[in-house]
Image 1: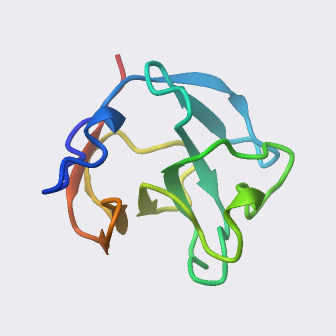
Image 2: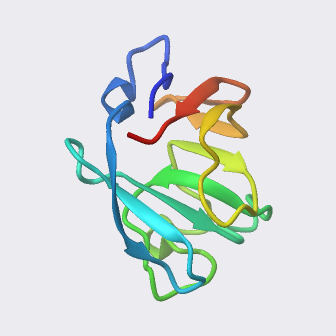
Length: 118
């Protein structure tokens, strides 16, 4: 992943290689950061009431036995660093506009993030 950028420098270390870990309960793959190992890319059909659309997320460790709200430790919201609205069976490679991006102190959307396979 590349292109994650915040004016305050938050998240620069999220631009890294994500390694395939297996599949979640709905059969979609999920990936773990190679250097920042506390971050994962995974699909969530409905992360929370504030995020009802299916999307691919970059966030904390998912509970792979669940089919929605894969991060039960994030309370009532959907805690993640970046999200892309999509119900695709796999992350779509290429450059996409984010549906959500967290910069540590505020959220935004529309930033171009690139996903590429080695």
